[in-house]
Amino acid sequence: MGKFQTKLRVEKLGEHSWRLIEPLIYRSDNVGLIVVDAGFETNFASVPRLPFMYLLFGGVGDEAATLHDWLYRKDHTTSTGSGSKIDRETADKVLRGVIIECLTQDGVSLFRAKVTAWAMWAGVRLGGASHWED
Image (tube, rainbow, N blue to C red; front, side, top):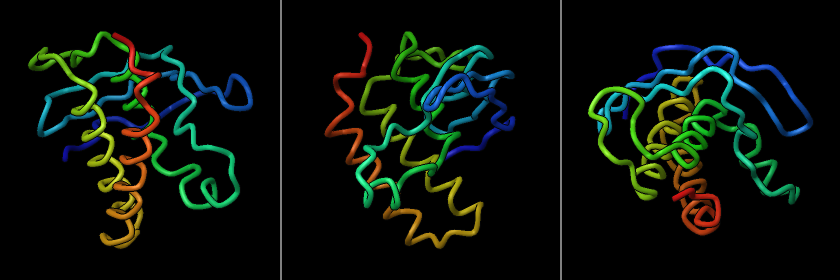
């Protein structure tokens, strides 16, 4: 787990595109400090637009999704802190933990937060490989 040090502040670029107007900073208990730079573009969680999938997971954890996009698209290191390499498995675990943290802070039950986080984790494990930048 960990804690966001800043709030997510973005501007909308298009229907599914956003740009950070300030850095998003997260302190992870596992990988150290992660700084998503201002100017970074994200689509948040690109959940398939199938009605039941989007109803369950659409709009969940925009902060977590932005952090995950950064870990997938950047040079796979934390921006500060340990500087250690982040592999795809670790990036996906960070996503799962951040979703649980964000949802429980928003008043969602721990059980529901864990179910949502595990479902989203499974989705990125199954469909995320093509988005991982080496």
